[in-house]
Image (cartoon, rainbow, N blue to C red; front, side, top):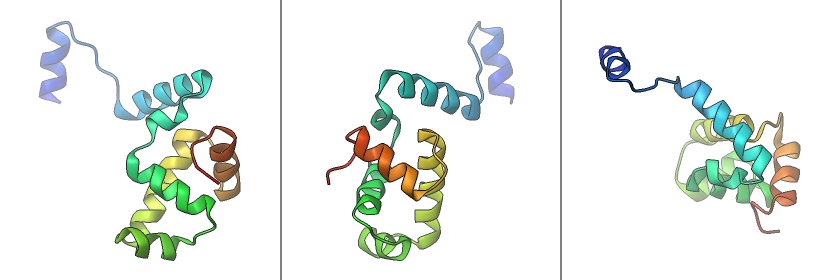
Length: 100
């Protein structure tokens, strides 16, 4: 918090990470560059999801926990403004974020 206050006194801007994510999400949605806001691991998870893999299978293939997969999926859903697995896969195919 001190760094934020000092930064503002130096004329720097502050934007919460949550708000910044929403701004970038909306910008990328409007410019069609949604893939740019996903991390490499999120894109990898999205690819496996599009191939019909379960959370458990994705976790095993990527050597991560199922909880981590679920966390990544939640982040992907938020970044792409979708509500479920079907919507995210359709979005990913339509916007060429995955290969089918």
